[in-house]
Every structure is written in structure tokens, then in C-alpha cells.
Image 1 (cartoon, rainbow, N blue to C red):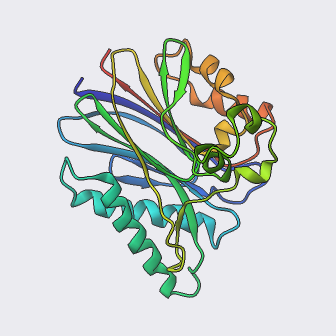
Image 2: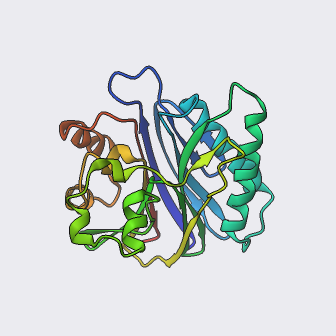
Length: 254
């Protein structure tokens, strides 16, 4: 596969004045009401990403946009095979530098993104924005949530069965991009997948997966060659979702 079709949709949450998510679509940063699509070749690396401004931080709307602008600038100079973990640590250093402006101190955002090169899909994420594989009517999470709950599971302190009954406070973030030099616990999840024909990649902010579970998400995308993202958005709202909502779907040559 050397061509990918992308479809993106982003909308502010219920009762909000502004969308605190931002999206990166092949070198262009968008924010607000976004409904975009197109086709890109992947002979050279192509990048797509979603950033979600953390509401308890400073200026969440600016937090997500500035993160993607810094990321975009680093990607313009990156080699096709450069380690994304290394690159994202440099992005975090530049993000921390924003805190020299007292008005920007404490800005924070999560990130999920993908590098497309040929049919190789490299997922990267920090925080709880997610990447899924859509295939054969199912949805499989490719990203990893950086949450206290996952940390406890990784350390063997609780089991997956016990995790289903834990308090929501354990869903709190343990890693994010943050404009604070004292926050040095920065972790990146990176995974590479060889996309097969008929498979798609879904990137989303938590406005999708906090409203709908994996079974519901899979059902919404099961029979769609090009997902109608407006209908997915409406389904999340009907399910009680009120947060900002951003999704990007990427499909290779069929």
C-alpha cells in the first residue's frame, strides 16, 4: 500500500465555548470545527495526530494546539527512520520551555499519532488519547493509556478483573506533555504494525472512548469503508458523551 485515505472530524464538547482538542493532518494543524478528508501517498512519511488539552491545566485550548505546532516543526526536520521516542522527548523539552512564560506554565496535553510509511504504521502516544486497529468487525487498542490504573496492573498490584471495579480516580493521567520543568516522569508508547488490506487505523481523543465501549465502537465502524464520522459523533452524544470529540480514520489501498 502506498496510498492512504484519511477522514477527520473534530467538534467542541457540549456547553463549551471552544474545542480543546486539535488535530494534525499531514503537516497542517486544525482546531475548532473540523471536517476534512483526502488521500496521501506514503512513499515518504506522513503524520497524523490528535492532541487533547488537559482541562485542569492552564489554557487547555492553547495547550493542544501548541503541542501539535511543536510536533509538526520537529517532524519537518526528522529522518524517515528516526526514533519517535527520541523525537517526542525533544518535543517535551520544547514544551517545557514554554513555562518560561508565566501565563503558559502548567499547560498540559495528551497526544496520539501515527507515522505512515508504505504499509508500516507506527503508533505513538502519551496520555490517554487512543489508537485502534479496525479489522474484521472488531476493534483492538494499539496505544497504551498512561493512567494510574494501568500502572497498578503493570506492577501486578491489581488484576484486570479487579480493575473493572476500581474507582474512577485511578483513571487519572500519570504522563502527559506539560509545561513544567519539574515534571520529569515522561513516557512514550510506540508500536509498529504492518497494515493489511481492509484494515484501518482509528485515532481518537477520549471524547469517543469515554462515551462508547470497544464493542459499540466496533459496531459503528463494522460496515463502513469510509466511516461517517458525524454519525459516530452523534452516537457518542446519545450515549451521554459531552467532552470534545476528535477522530481520524486512516485506510490504505483496498
